[in-house]
Amino acid sequence: MLVMISSDFKQSLAISRLCDDILESNERIFFVSSINYNGRVFESRSRNDSVLTKLSKSETEMFFMQRTLQTSLSKEFDDIVGPLNFITVQRETFLELIFPYTEGLILVVCDLDVVPNYLAKRILFVLRDFDWASKNSQIYNA
Image (cartoon, rainbow, N blue to C red; front, top):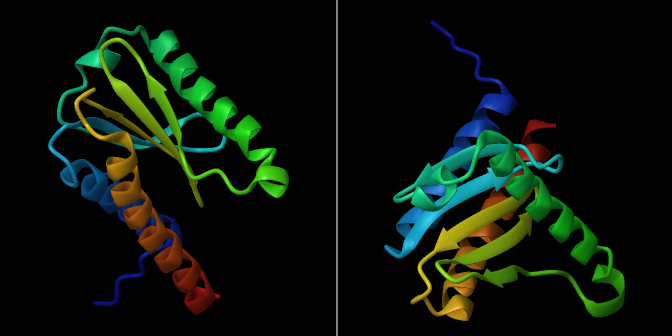
């Protein structure tokens, strides 16, 4: 029996693996989410999502849309000051790392005890592998 797998399904599996890989990269990461360009969550993984469970559904949607808008506005200056690698937001109880990538952005919520630049470099490495694989897969499938 021949089973055809759509490219959307393959991409969805790849993004699920990406979120898993990022979550597994550091035990102090609480939550990882892939958010599309419209601010909608595409995929999420959590070890401890108590931060987000405090928010109502509409507050959670606004939270994700705000991250998308923040990233989009920051990327407006890529040609002038160089490409955006990541954004760090430090709150009283947790740290957010926001990374643009080919499918939108990745939001990572983690413990304040992490070293942000070290963790960001590890995540950027994982994202670059993902982006490279996605580009090569699109070329191959074209």
